[in-house]
Amino acid sequence: MTTTAVPVPTGTASGIMLIIHAGAGDQGKRRTPRENAKVDHDLRQALEAGYALLEAGAPAQDAVCAALRVLEDAEEFNAGRGAALTSQGKVSMDACLMTGKDKEAGSAIGVEQARHPIDVARAIKERTKHAVFAKPSSDLLRDWGIETCDPEYFITDLRRQQLIEAQSGGDLWSRHGTTGAVARDRAGNLAAGTSTGGITNQMPGRVGDSPLVGCGTYAGNDSASISCTGIGEAFIKETAAYQIAARIRFAGQSPEQAAQAVLDGVTSHGGDGGVIVLPSHGPGLIAYNSPGMNYGYMSESGSEVNHSGE
Ligand code: ASP
Image 1 (cartoon, helix red, strand yellow):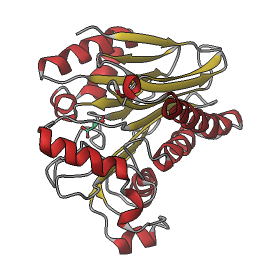
Image 2 (tube, helix red, strand yellow; image 1 turned 90 degrees about the vertical axis):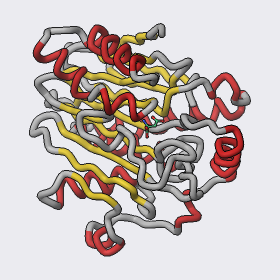
Image 3 (cartoon, rainbow, N blue to C red; image 1 turned 45 degrees about the vertical axis):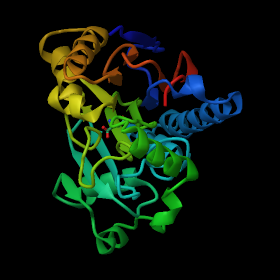
Image 4 (cartoon, rainbow, N blue to C red; image 1 turned 90 degrees about the horizontal axis):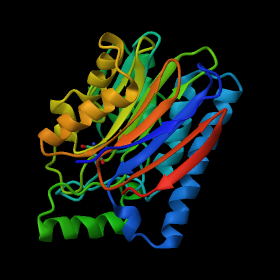
């Protein structure tokens, strides 16, 4: 499979930068111009929300969370409202946040009520001594000050329709716009976050790569911050995010070489998808071997959004 690599220019070598994605696939080619305009608008809003914080000197993880909160509210993306539905017609959302300086991480799996699952991941990282929670209880969410919503809030007509289509056509791998962000702040620190509803028609209890540290999400100041999207099973078997970081750190590979090798590995497991990679110095990277990818970036050198993915 051919890999498309989009370098993200940096201003100074360690200048602030925010890169986001909202899923891999080819949905952009099937959407109406109006729908694509909404995708572009929401990608831009997410970039602006996160980048304003970086400009003001906030830590990278604040920018990652701010961008993801916007994408979680945008119902065309598969996170928060508009999350994909399981085979039982419910949402089961996953999110992960990791910071590169201390390599601390929080991962939330099977979230059903939090408006912003990335906030749950952050609370786990900052308010507990644990790294991963499955189905955090409503009492815990309340203690952590997390905003909750009725389960119906998350379910859209489009996702209902896609579930019907997946169940009648047997499309096991239907993917719809998982969201992710990586950022570099003024202090040169990195952070990465990913938030998803998983895969339409997934079996109840199935977990993809997004919330798994080192698979769908990773950040280390000694290498890079990474968020992945695509067929989660293949990214898990490749330990994709950490493998990219390790190739950069230990093998001295460029982000592009590392991403290419890992996406080839993903292909060998029958998957495809994309990654966003932001090293501690130098340009960032968007790379995908799926038919398209929704992404955007903002740095001291400029900004761009692209809506070709699901
Ligand atoms: N990687 C996600 C998962 O497997 C899906 C996606 O990226 O769209 O749950």
